[in-house]
Structures are given as C-alpha cells and as structure tokens.
Length: 211
Image (cartoon, rainbow, N blue to C red; front, side, top):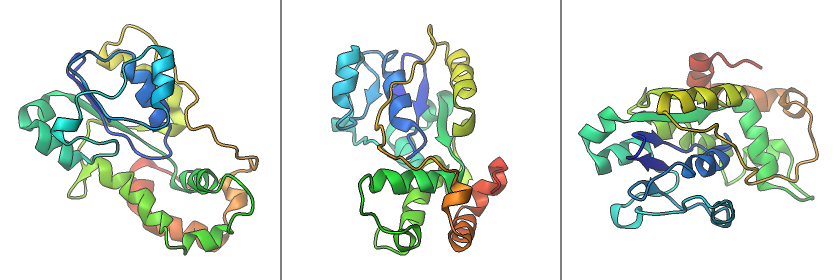
C-alpha cells in the first residue's frame, strides 16, 4: 500500500494482480513524507533498485493489504477525497488458478477441488483480499479499478493521470515456479468454475468477465 503526498495518490494493493511489482515500481517516485508499507522478502529488491523502501507506516497503523475503510479512517476525509485512489482487479477464474500455483509451488499438491474445500477457504480469502479491500459497505470506494488483463495500458494511463515523469517499469516480483501454463478454462473443472462464478458474481458483472 502506498499513500503518496508527493503525487497525491493512494494505491490499494489486492492479491494476485501484480500488486507487489506495481508497488515496487511506484516506490521509485515516492518522496520522504510518503507512506509505504513493507513487502517481504521483496524489500531487498527495492533496495537493490535504489527505490524507497517501507517508511512512515508504523506509527500510523498502516499495513500492506489495508482496506479502503481503514485508510480513510487513518488519513481523514480531506486527503481521502482529494487524492486519486486506485487498485487492480483480475479475472477471478484466472486469479484463483494463479493463487493455487503460488501457494503450492512444489509437488505434491492437492487437487483444485481439494484446495477449494480446504481450511484455507481460498475463494473467500481472494474476495477479502480483492473486492473487500477497495469497497466500503459493498460500494467501490476508489476512483479507478484497473484491470490486470490490460496491465501495460493501465499503467500508462496511471502515469499520465498521476503526472509521473517516467514509464512504470515492473520488476518481476514473487516469481512463480508454475510450469502448467494452460488456460484456467482447461485447468478448472465445471464445479469449481461454478463456485468461483457464484463467489465473484459482482466483480464478474462489474468488469465484464466471462469464462
């Protein structure tokens, strides 16, 4: 999560949407008064790139995946209403598969069906770390929900909107060892597809996602 007073923006970080890479890229342009939450172990990557690392977050109660209501409460209405707020969303079927292979990077791994029903409750976790982060009482609370599927175009539009002096260059953070590069359509069985559709029905409708 980043709050940039220098460029007057708030980046809310969702999961499995290239959030860590985007956060690192944005850190390059942050000033000394900006709020940047820590990302481990990728803090070392920021350091190696010469970008600003985690700063100004501890005494204020900010953390990496803080939700919109929490940010608004901490910074107050004036800053919240005047700063440009954005996040990223992703096709929920594709996002689920990405999360599955990130959590289980090595064999043996449970089947998709077993994972869905596991104690991790992955569908509810992903919704809590997505839609629930950028909404307040079920309503979108940011100025723009960027789409992961249009990542490069979205980043360029953000650069222009925020007035950043350079193109956002994404580092390869949280690289996966995933070898199965099949489409989620081939990986997910019919029942899992249906469960995902039911859980993320609002996002699917809002952003026009389809199997």
